[in-house]
Image (tube, rainbow, N blue to C red):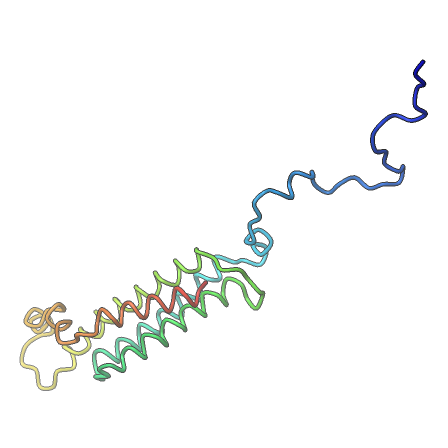
Length: 174
């Protein structure tokens, strides 16, 4: 004859045990580090700070391309401008909280860097043509005589400047 065990088989929990916070299988689920840090994320703040920095960089870029001829020094200005834009995006989005790398910040930094470079280059061209001393033609006629594409061919490093500004802004805004 078999004897019935005194207790049911299996593990018994003490009566004062707390329930699990999550199911045991959830520990194997993929972990997204962004989830914990998203509570500090402010997309609108990142956009506002980034746009403000991009406008400042664009105005400096306008003067540097339209009035002052920096030559290869524009690469340094591109790196500094990209860093300023990226840092502003991070500061606006995260404040001083530690944060993981995030693709939205990178995309925002790259887009604002691109906009600052293209806008500053265009406005710099207009400013350069507008400040021609003793011009006898109107601004519209001067812009028609010297199109932007012709002005860019005089700056062989223009594409490198654009790439540096966009890349540094994206990497800084991670």
